[in-house]
Amino acid sequence: MIAKQLSYTLDTIADAAAGFWDIARAYPVITFSGEMGAGKTTFISHLCQLLQVQQHVSSPTFALINEYVLEREGKEVIIFHLDWYRLRDAAEAINAGMEDCIDQAHIGGAYCLIEWPEKAPELLRPPYLAVSIDSTGVEERTMTLQPIETLK
Ligand SMILES: Nc1ncnc2c1ncn2[C@@H]1O[C@H](COP(=O)(O)OP(=O)(O)OP(=O)(O)O)[C@@H](O)[C@H]1O
Ligand SMILES: [Mg+2]
Image (cartoon, rainbow, N blue to C red; front, side, top):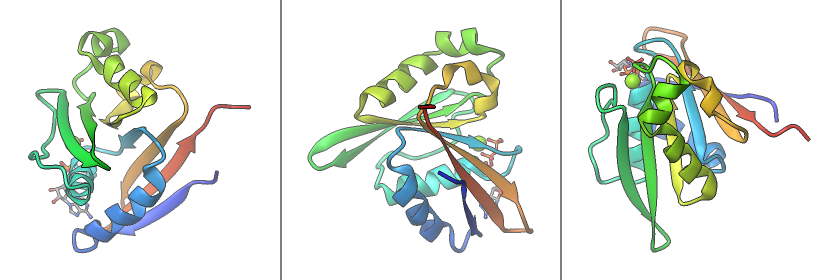
């Protein structure tokens, strides 16, 4: 699939999250790349609001893993919100329990939303959705969605 793009401001971010989810819901692992302050956490927070997550969504920069729960068709779905910024390498990521979150997402019943995936790329395996956020105006952000599929 070719990459899709989506532009939004804070005024239209809720609609953007809905359009995003139409595509992204098929991918249990979603990575968010972009400079510091690009808006990764802000977007994830609005996405979780759309999904009716009850917990407060904040940056997991210090905890590294935030866990939210939502109800889907009578079943609990877990959302792991990971921030790899402070990790030095894949070994540190595995020690912090990041691989377990990814495994759980691939098995089913969980989503994994990962900020700063480039800090431990070895942990990622297809299929996943690679999202990058760029600043394209004072308040405008443009998001590129690139599915990373298994080569056949
Ligand atoms: N269209 C927009 N989308 C998201 N954030 C925006 C937008 N316009 C302005 N902002 C502002 O940009 C900042 C984005 O901060 P945020 O913490 O979401 O970035 P981040 O990419 O998660 O950074 P970090 O790499 O430090 O985790 C916020 O202060 C937010 O209010
Ligand atoms: Mg962040």
